Image (cartoon, rainbow, N blue to C red; front, top):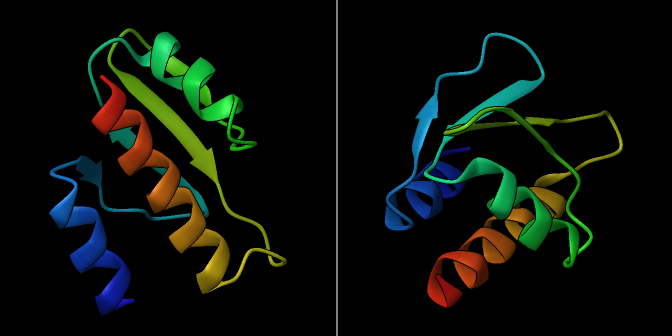
Amino acid sequence: VTDLDEDRRALDLAVTAPETNMVYVHIPDASHFVARLALQEIRCVAVSEQCIRLVTHLDIDDNGVKQTLRAFSRCLDAA
């Protein structure tokens, strides 16, 4: 988990510490970001104009999380 948190910090994302399997990421223009992530097969939902929610499942391992972080990085780079 430490490696994943370091990756998240490197992307400079504001993330609310998870209490469940839901992760909330605070990002400008959330609906646009959700659409860009969907093009990379990452499913999430905008819960407000500046917040998206991702949900993990038992079948999502560290590699899946890293793949999601790489997708975030690509979307941020393209912004």
